[in-house]
Image (cartoon, rainbow, N blue to C red; front, side, top):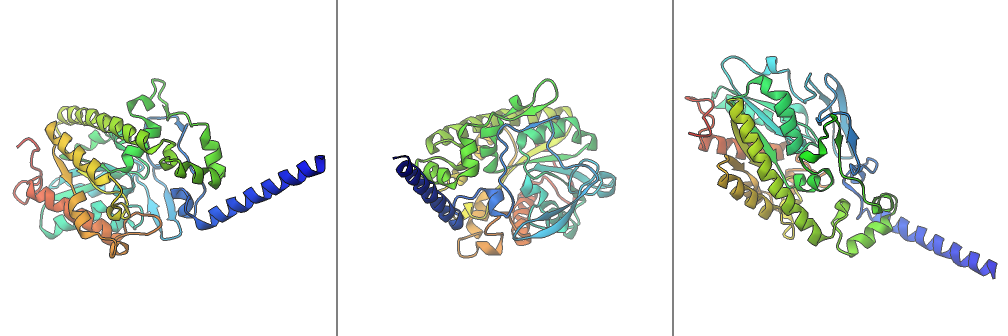
Length: 351
């Protein structure tokens, strides 16, 4: 009897291990970090001793995965940028661009990032403006606000551009908004769900969750994730008011920059990121915010049959051609709205 039970249990374990291996070999349920050749990473329950998300100042780092490799150098602020005293000069308009990995330029060397292309366009047109790259991979608008409030206003920028993309909505699910910043100076994300342990180690669990309508690492069913998106949307609108207040206090112009975050999203007819970004643009404008939305022009130019010209199929970030396209669309809107020009290098957003 005991022998039969043992054999049955052994058979079940072997079968499960076989299924687990088969699922892993398909690669279908890998997380983002796993798909790029790195280990599983989760920010559920993350804690840090400060309120800021930035790289270690004055360091170098090799950014490498299965599709690209290059070295990053971080300045005294922990940004992938020259020191402000070297970048800015007395005759240039100072534009600080805040955002996550798409502003930092993950996927390309320093000279092919969004801000460097913006600088190149301005230089070509003899417009006296310099763009400072304050993007940090993994950041979000709440981190951008805390960093701007406590550090970057010291640069006395003429214009602040805050980048927002669809990944910021999913970040909000496990990070929350200002409640992540505790009065003791620490940052704490939401506690990890109990299922996260099993999700981490079992691709069978990931398959079952996907089959039952769960939205990946959010550990929410799709309908619940949509509700979470709505909460994030309202939080971003409230945050926009905080940015406006800070910009007014600092005598600085402010604009929001909405963009797609993965080349695959632009070719996915079932993904609602375009709808989310369009609604955010509309609601920010109702709050009298200046908004530059490059989602629509990029969506019309990047199609399924040419998307590999603009980015990496596994990682999803843009290559130099993709970042140049994004910069071009933002630059055209800056010119169209007369935010920058030869005559007035920084146009007031209230004009």
